[in-house]
Image (cartoon, rainbow, N blue to C red; front, side, top):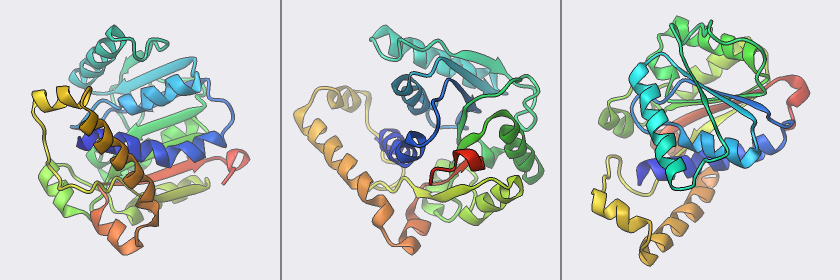
Amino acid sequence: MGTAYEYFAKRLVLARWLAKLPRVRRLIIAGLPEKYGSSLDFLLIAQEMGVAEVVVVDERPPALDKIRKSVAAAQAVGELTPLQPHYVLAADMARLVELSGIFDLCLGSEVLQRLDRVRRQQYVERLVQLAPALGLFAPNADDPAHTNLSGLSGLRLTELQDLVKPTGMPARTGYVDMPPFPPGLNRSAEQRSRATTGRLEALAMRMLHQYARLERHFPLGWRRGHAHIVYALINSAQFRGE
């Protein structure tokens, strides 16, 4: 449930920003999550936008194997069928020397926190070279209830803003993913199966969707301490559209 809510909340944050960008033909998913999910929400966005080329890059073979299997499973039931992602194994996520050319958009989630301070800056600077628009998400270090339970490191929003400043590119930053249930809430396989068909489950998900739309109206101090994720939406001046 937590991953589903996260995906929806992130998509809400991205929607208005993406709508103001030029057409996206080439997308790079710059690193896969350290622990939770496989960034299938980004692939859904790629499908909805009609992206012609999707490149997924990560330095961990198991992470790439996981997303390959997840995409294959989705396509077996008729989802994500227009996409044929290209998977790239990187030697160094900070440098990404395996990639060349210009992409229209770069998205990355749960990557920055697993790089040290120097390599984080190198990573952001490299992405700026590869794409004029970047959407980056990381665990929120000001929500210890989430980071302690998840076992992930995190970034404060001010740290993320400091990473963005040297690029000289306009950016919108903030907090997202504040579900109305405690961190670590898990459901059994049977419960997840029922979620795909049960009317009550469908109603519950619709209510969660409405709740997610309210996140940006919550008081800033509350968001700082309860959001699971901090984000930065970065784009070059000609694509500002904010």
